[in-house]
Length: 112
Image (cartoon, rainbow, N blue to C red; front, side, top):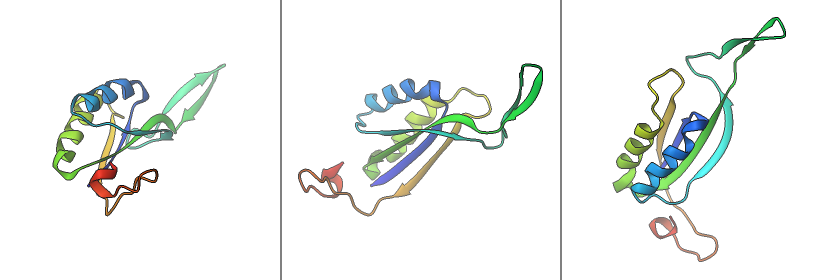
């Protein structure tokens, strides 16, 4: 099993959700986040004063999938989230040792 974490632009969430649904991935966790990478924020003008906005709004997605569809899942997220502009985000993949569905007691692949 693999855990895929993706940091994306908020307006791309619906497109990513649809792309995941099309490949059969169900069950995602979405968290609103703020952060910056290489873009290091930007300067805005408010009432005549300049100020730096260094934490930009982002969305963090977390998905647990079986290892055999992990690569397809990453490709689907990347294709749906890409705008071609700076700040599109990042995708991280890590191994999951085990999973347990609390309600039924199912374990590992059956739990996801």
